[in-house]
Length: 140
Image 1 (cartoon, rainbow, N blue to C red):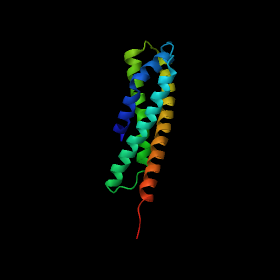
Image 2: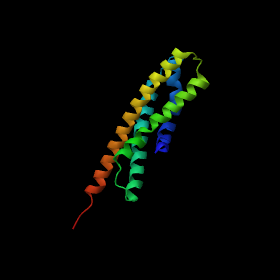
Image 3: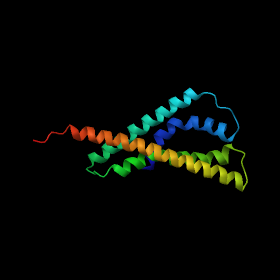
Image 4: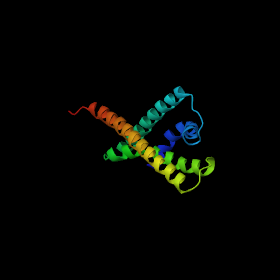
């Protein structure tokens, strides 16, 4: 399930560095149109990956797809938090208890928000997919 978040995370990996550098490194971020396009790509890739994994689950006759679709979509938030660890130790100059707790506390809240948002996107896409495929079944 956690590997379901790798492909959506790879779609935003490069942009995360620039966002973190502007938020935590006091640099100015000026290309908001690229950020919007990357966000749309993130939503689309999350929906498609979750639908594909739901299809594989239904093909294996496992019909309990609800929570798995939510967790597969939201697992990108875990990858973002792992990137936070990398950014803090490899790229930033932050040190001390207050900066560490401030950074990881706020990033935990933001990553939890991404987990909920992308999990909802994955669940809604899977729900739409499952309703669409089961609507086309004809019982005679």
